[in-house]
Amino acid sequence: MSDEKIRLLMVEDDMVDRMAFQRMVKAEGLPYEYTCASSAAAGREALKAGSFDVVISDYNLGDGTAFDVISEVPAGVAIILVTGAGDEGIAVKAMKAGAQDYLIKDQSGNYLKTLPVTVANSVKAKATERQLQQYHVELEKVVEELRRTNEELVQQIAQRERAEEDLRESLETSANIVETIPSGLLTFQYQPPGEIFLVSGNPEAEHLLGIKIKDWAGQELDEIWPNARVQGLTRALLHTLQTGERFKEEAGVYMKGGITRFFRVRAFRIPGELLGLAFEDVTERTKAEMALQEAHEEQERRVEERTADLVTENLELKEDIKRRKRSDDLLVRASRLAAMVQMAKPLTDRLSELLATIAGSTGEALSRVDASAPPDVEPLLQQVLDSSQEAASTITRLGQFARAAAGPAGLQIRNVFSLSDCARKAVEICGLQHNSQAGDDGKNLSLELDLNDNCLVEGAEEDLVQVIVNLAQNAKEALPNGGTIKVRTGTEEDHSVVWVEDNGVGILQHDIVKIFEPFWTSKESHSGLGLKMCFGIVHSHGGTIRVYSLIGRGTKVRVSLPHVSQTQEGPGEAEVSSPSSE
Image (cartoon, rainbow, N blue to C red; front, side, top):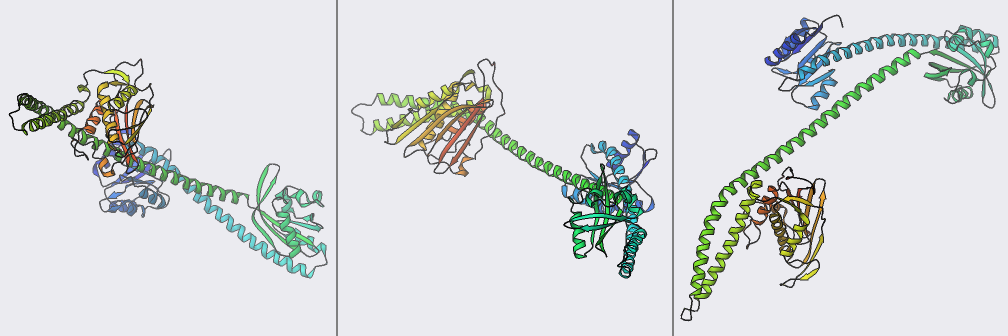
């Protein structure tokens, strides 16, 4: 085929793809004599009208599929399937239907770049297949010839056995029969307890084994047929001598002098305690069968490997879809956060002004209350003052939340500090001690600290102290009957990590996904900004925050921040992840 053009039929219903194929052939100067068909029906008509070396068919056609075309492709023509579906089932079905290969169509047309190599490989593979088929046909002829020869041999043996019945007492007559057998034939004499010695043989046996009977007469079977005892041939021949049952083996192995040959072996008993061993050389036939089997196994291996590749590609596609979904979720959270930032600052500024006015006026009113005032006036004014101060505290937290949500720009001062120092300050602020203690309500709380001083991060230290304070306060509130709070720090790869754990009541699974939403809270006396503020602060430091909880078992909160070294200059960078739960 190297000096001839490859006759190629392309069946493609997409005109753009057909034109792209034609431009590629002309641009590359490929040795193709090609015909294009725009439908399955046109492809079948082209196959009837001309002869081709290769058929390339798109899987989805306007009036059918590639299998409608493949079914009409004559034997000896290579088939290549083109599909945009990426369905491994289609690929396997196409290979079983006779396709040599297949290509995955992409929008950019890059699959056309690999088409010339695929066509060349498919043509070579089909030529090899045709050669194997021709060889198989020739082999079958040889086998048929051997079968006829064997039938003739069996007939001759039958004739010889009938003659031996008449000449049982004549060894000379047996020798004459040996000389007339067309296959290799050896005659052996049995000698107890289990040895077989050569008596005579015919010229064909001398030719096949490369020996002279007169030089080998009297030799034991293992000398003439090496490894006969190891291969079980000696045992089989002894069984024939003892029972009279004939023995046959289609491809007995004969090894001598580093050469391996295969013989079709037949053994039978001859009157006078003799054993006849007839054999024909089937080496070429056996090797051809072995080569055909190896080719078949290689083809199956290629199909299995390609199937495994398709399964892997499918799994990678599913993982990519999951990653895209997580990115979409993060974008939604970011948009909500941006809206809260825009809303929070003017709201906190205005409310702070109003609350300052209320608190100031109330304090002034309290200072003017005297003994002549009604008894309920002072308590009511004090209640107004306390409420305004509580509201001011909530507004302050809202302002902190807005500042954290503003991201890195909201961090006015960035220093390198120890995350473990933040943890120590936080537990001190929360009034926790590194041992068992009884709180004001009588419940026992136990604090366990495990701090690594190598946990260096960069950012606003006070903000991260506030994060750990919030987490520790939540842990205390999750222990209504007392329990243990664990605060530990450490490093994981290029991040510094702080864990705050409790063995308290836990959080419902459907609530975990809500706890970072603004104004959501499960506690009546809380504003619902604490954890959202924590998320904003951690987010602005390039970190992540995760919550893991089981009802009745407790809650673990993990905060991970980019780690910096003592000598590092400038802030570290890290991918910011949205909160998740296990």
